[in-house]
Amino acid sequence: MEISAHGITKASALAGLCADLAVSRGDVVAFGDMPNDLPMLRWAGTSYAMADADASVRAEADHVAPSCSEEGVAQVIESLLGGGDATASPTVPDH
Picture 1: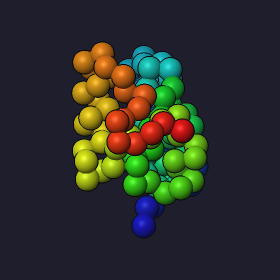
Picture 2 (picture 1 turned 90 degrees about the vertical axis):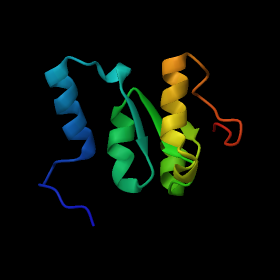
Picture 3 (picture 1 turned 60 degrees about the horizontal axis):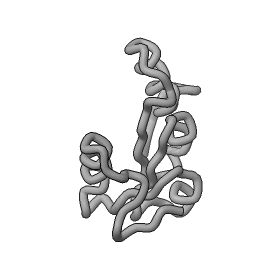
Picture 4 (picture 1 turned 90 degrees about the horizontal axis):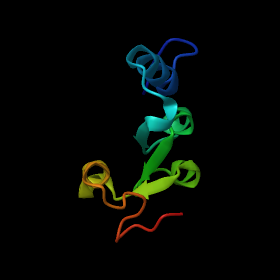
């Protein structure tokens, strides 16, 4: 169960944090696996669904990262920081 104040989402919290830090929406990379992550993924400049995410999340994300058990977030971040191709995984095709 996730509980928050009315109108507060992961997207609104992320937007507020980015405004405070002067980070543009286009520079944000977000990861999600459940429908409650969709507003955040829609808000972020680049979105990744985990390979083992809910089908609705995989359908809306820009990219698919390897599963949580494969440390997919770490793999993508490492690729982004290392300058590799973080838009696809050898084991999980982009959609």
